[in-house]
Length: 603
Ligand code: FHN
Image (cartoon, rainbow, N blue to C red; front, side, top):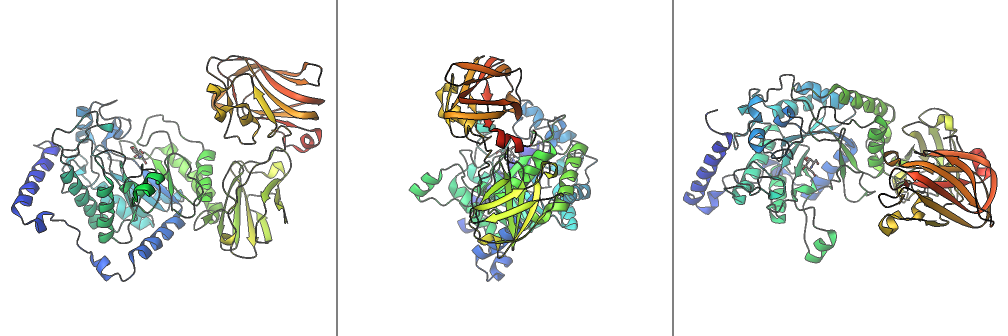
């Protein structure tokens, strides 16, 4: 390569600029959006084409995300490590060493298929500007590497052969760009030759090139909309431009401007283009109206990182189940290595997910979320007259109690082995499974209703623990910055996602509950966050009106600690933390009567 890759594009930009001057305005945009034959031929309204495509995509439920590029040679984050862990000049030369000789597109497609993934999104171009295909609009691409082969083309073909829908991720920012105004995350470094209109034209040219050469694509996954140079007008215009080229192309909301609040959008009467929402590294909220997809990394980093933390199978599958239960798709990311292989341990994790889906995938694919909304308890999905329950946590005592539903349960079966007793009354649905039959990842129970399960109104599920302390008056010696989000009541709300917390450098504290009347208890269950275990020595004390008396002494607590003791009668009970390594914090402090304790599964 005799010229710096960017030089070619600079030259092209100058040529284009001259043409724009020389040609009448009508021809200035040589790639202006012509009505594609598909669009011309289609008599079906665009909205209908889009909604049919989205329905088919939602049925797929589970996809593979791939973040890959020359940065794999450094094992640092794609885009974001440029100019940080890796000096920009060095980062931009990595392509000269990029030679993933082990790259095997068929193997990647087969790995996705074995995992139960039905579509695949590849970072064809990330924020660093490198293109994994031989783009004629930018010579900073795969053909300039020793590897030379068209990664996008090979993977698109392999996906089609395996029945996996091929999709493209494309970054709107190009921090290496000649024309894109920002040359680093957030723009602390600026381009010396900014020209956003020309960059916008490059985006249109390259996305059309991806569709023309590798399409029809399942979806375009745009990213980077949050940066200032990208405007709502650019985004909405790009959406319309691409829909005219491929009407059934699904386009995510990051094509436009996602970080304008709904209130501002309404106040300004803004239209934000995009066919679905994209919550990232978190499970989206239950929503059957706006299609959405959670994207999440199987490790911690999007691009490959040596010895990165790999998520446990339970977390991987429960994230998928909770997402489907919320009516969302789950796009799960792998970062291939510099030699072109996907890390064997990541492949193994995906195979384990595929094995689970082989058994229970009928409760995930082509389902809709609900009607029992996801929560601590688990999640549910529905399809036809079937309602699938994925129970992940059980009450401390007694059966799982679900709210009443409008349809009648005509049959039930436990899919994950063992016995289940399902009882429906006008007050609700009780699910009783012996502790020995409760599955580690999710106990799967299929209910058959007397009509379409989708017709049942979605309802939230509160996992009631049976704790006598639940929602009783709570106080504490210290609360983190006196914030109500962390006050004493959070340890008595039956919600393990909230917690009581104290200020930093607090090394002793108490957490107290007042039953308002003398109450008999014989078991406590204390849940200290696994990642925040700070208690080193504690006591359980009760006040029967005659001062505080200690009835249990311990050292560490940890997650889901169960403590049994001879029945005591008390009006107030407290956890007296005598020593802690730092500000103690407790998710839940539950107290049970001898009756409920007798049936509580041993934890
Ligand atoms: O900056 C990117 C990031 O590198 C990654 O591609 C994720 C994937 O959704 N999107 C952006 C961060 O929101």
